[in-house]
Structure formats: structure tokens, C-alpha cells
Image 1 (cartoon, rainbow, N blue to C red):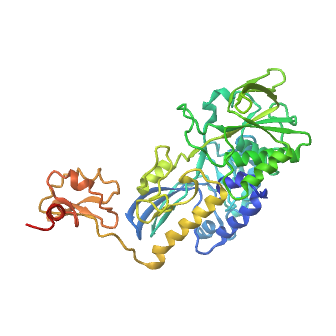
Image 2 (image 1 turned 45 degrees about the vertical axis):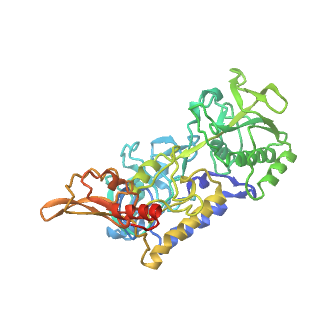
Length: 490
């Protein structure tokens, strides 16, 4: 648990340590009696409705037993205690995704030292099953290299979707040279380099030669506000502020270093954000209003030439720097689309999950009992994400504590004597409220009233007129028209 925040060094605008804020909260969650953590797991299927969801979860085989799992198998005092002995003897090495590939990890690993729960995981895609980890684990008997995926079904009243975000594949914008030039990195790679627990121990160095950079260019809106068809048309919202934070960290950690920020607009929208912007200006950061059009590399020095148009001075400029940092756009997590379909939640054309109403119901969805939290709705900084999560948790707890929910009396009904059981309406229903059931030897349509929103899609399509909207039958609608046109006169 912990999400993207666990990868950050500092948070803006207060410059607090990210792990100092996050780790105590993670530990509290791990120790809470009423919270069951199911990490390394994913939702496979969802059935039911508000107050009565049946959620099937795949617990992926992690190859390591927790103390509770070991106890259930009769292994007294067994299970993983996070000692790390298995990591030391494992011969398989691969890039660490938590460190953005800039540091190796083993085939049996944890993401980072503060991880909750502190249980190692076997990467079966790379594990050669040599057995060294099993031998060194000894009497704890925590490692099971034959472990299989397990499916469990839990019954829940409500659900909160918090699928987060991924970083846009900025290499698609080849004009900036990412993955082509060694000294062009993304902002998240910069976070790991500047972090004391990162691959370089907090020392910012150039990937090409390990030298300390003195001139660093930050290219903001890298892939954001991009209508070329390659990037993302929306603003990623927090890129401006974390780039300002990065500029401060460079000035603070590297005496004599100068950060150059190429920007379209500095969107410092939050509390104390504008003041933070002024502070970075006073510290000596240089700002160039203009999107960089190209980045070239000197093949000998590995220095980079940033080409841009300064729109304030109305002239082109070329700037030689030691390093380029791309403030890459954010995009919905790759699993978001699969998860939202399981829960019957809509999404925008950009893939962000849609709330029921942006102002009146910002945490709810059109599926009763399903709520949204965090960046799955769209780009948010940490304060907005926390506010969203607290709102979703509060909204999700209300039906649970009340024990009942109030529904609108507008839902579809089926005249069973007219229903031919063709099932054509099932795929049309956007809320999965319809199902064919067997009654008196034939199939008829049944409506789950708790899921139906009374949109009328099924009723308008039904070839036999079997489905109708309660309170919106044809005679009722005709009567309303007559009352309006004739004033109630026959």
C-alpha cells in the first residue's frame, strides 16, 4: 500500500518528507483490527448491488507465507518476518520498477524498506526455482515455490475504486529524446535520484557519467495539453508544482546549480502554491515561457541542447544544459478500465472514471454503492486526493451504518405475459439491472430494482412492449400531455 506517494522525496509546498507523513498511516492500516489487507490481489468478478455485492478476488501466488498463513498450516513461529536473508542469496537480478529501473532487485523482493505489509514476494516470471531462498529461510518455512493463485469471494455493502494513475509513455514524443539520450529523465526518475533512499542515496548525478549537473532544464507539460494526437489534451495539474519543488531541491543540494523551467503557464492553484512559486523565483530559478520543440545531444560531452521559442521575448533560444527532466503527463492506470467495467462505472473519453455529478455527488457513481477516490477520477495533488478519499470513505460508510438505502421509485418493470425472453435488452442496459430467469417453464426478464436507474433504454427498445417505466406508462404520459394542452378538459 502507499501508492505513488511512497516514491516521492518531499511534498510541496511545505517540503515535508513524504515517507514521514505516509509511513505511520500505512502502519496504522496494517495494524487496524477491522481492516483486512489483501495486497498482491485483484478483483476478478463482481455481482450484486448496493448492500449485497459479491466480489471475487484473485489472491496471486506470492510464494511467501505470512505469519498468519504459516500458523494456519501448523508451522509454529513460521512465516515471513521480513529479515531479507532470501534476498541476499537469490542469484536472479532484474530492474527494480519502484526505483524506475535505476536500481536492481532480486527475484524475491520487497518494493522498499518501509513497505506494509513487510512480506517478501517471489517474481515467478523470473524465478529459476534454485531453492537457495528456501534453504536459507530455515525453520520459518515461509517460502513455498509451488504456491498457486487462490480465489476468494467476499460479501460487501459498498465499494471504493482507487485505481490511481500511470505515467504517460513520454518516449512516444521522440523530439525530447527520452530513452534515446541518457541524460533525459522523467520527473519520477528525478524523484528517486534526489531521494535519500533512492538508487544514488540522494545525490543527483547524470546517468551518462555520474557527474553532478550544474544546469538542469525542466520541460513542463511534457505530453500534457497536447492536441497532436500523441499526448494528452488535458492538464495534469500537479506537474507545475512538483517541478517548482524540484527546482528548489537542486538549488538547495547543489551549490551554484541553476534550474531552467520551460513552461506554458505556471498553474499554482492551491493553498500557499502561488507563494511557493514566488519563493522559487527569488531563489534563482530561471523561467522561460515556451514549450521546448527539440532536444539534441552532443555525442562527446553528452550535454543536451534544448531548442525553444521564448514567447515573452518573442525570439527563439537554444540552451545547453547538463540534464533534462520531463514533467511527463499522467494517465489512467492500465487496470482502471477493466476494474470500472466490473463495477459498472462509466469513464470519460480520456479514460478517467466518471462521478455521478461533479458538484452534487463528486464521490459517487451511477452505480449505487460504488464510490471513487483519488486520481482515478482525474489528476489531483496530494491534498485533493486525501480530501477525495475521506469523502468517498464517508459516503461509503453511510449505507453500511444505516442498514438500508432509499431508492427513487422510478425503475423498469416487466409484463411477464408479454415477454418473449429474447434477452435483447440485457446488453443495452448500462447498469446491468436486467437478467433472464426461468419462470413456469419459460424465460422472462427480471429487473433488479436496486440497480435500475429508470433511464428507459430497455423499454424503448423492447419489441414486444413488455418492459415499461413505472410512473411513465404510455397512458400516464398521454394524460400529462392532455392536461398540459387542454387544461384538463375532455
